[in-house]
Image (tube, rainbow over all chains, first blue to last red; front, side):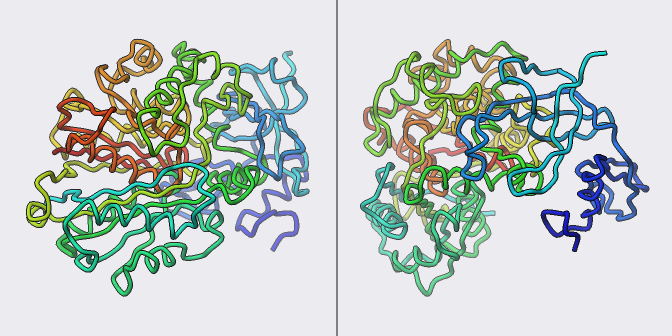
Length: 133
Length: 385
């Protein structure tokens, strides 16, 4: 068991990598399917021969909402912005979008992952808007 | 496989039922289902009980006190759980038990008691229906929040408006005034919806179904047995069920519920019907956007035209396909385990011609659409009289 992982899993190393500010997924060596969050097993071809690969953490907003009525455990944080982002490498992730006002969020905006604690103290990925260069 | 018919139905008043416990609510529904037929309780061979949440019931094996209290011991009892589609899953399970020949007469009851815990706790419990590892625990996702993302995506791609979303809730509240079992039988205006408090952008309070208590029950019989029990059997002519990813972020599209599209195609094929044959539908309007997506996913209108469908009154009583004539989840209420069975109860009454003030004249074919989670699984049933 890995202290950093908020739950028991074969991919507990993922949370060690988050602590190092790295977003690391898995790729099936057999059928090349990619997973982030990582999977220890390939749900597509049933192989468990997986390799790790680092993602850029960059992507674009596919969908978003602003949570005004939150579950008990998040009521202190409300309102907060949730986004689903499609990462440049293919996988999609849901997380908070931080550092921006709700009215300024638009689908299609570029984002990048940052690494911050959630209310239970675990380090997870969140997103912030990527500055246009 | 044998034909299966609904031969008895029962339904409680939905609402904040602080007067009754989980098992007592179930008893009300089961008693009226038994009284709806000429059979006696001891003829029922098995019970299937749908309850979505152990946490809300504050009881593990929550179907057991129900089976006990409704007098079904020592007969076979199965508890079914499929989140918001628990009732639809229980109906499918009952159909399998009778169609297979294992049983001739089966009780299917769905029940939930949701108002005994504080609202924030109920939201917490229901939030656990999202992916706990990758969505709910780290990021505080909620069900209104998931559907809000679908709503925003639908509005952006197809030009659906907040006003069109509001019209769904206005229609269903109006329909609920004709249903004595409804939680909120009162008319509301588009402005009421638009001005109600924000829950998850762009959804507001009246875009969301209430938290309700309630129960519903049906008795299922084989075709042969049904003819001996009643002159008005309602046959389950087609079934469909499909599933999708645990994490909503893994979905391929946020403007439709793919599992609903797949499930409805299966049910239409099995029942040998076309969409045009459907006289009325009970759809899973947990949120206003969910009913708009249902119009499209079930093929009532073209993809992207759901907003126009409600605006033109096509889903109103007297429209192309009246939808949720009993008030739907938005106004009748959504006691999780009861909802799918409640849909079957309403349809049975309609196909028997017992719809009262909300009767769809001459209804012969009807459809129910019960969505679990955010399309994690969808159960579609087609009924014929």
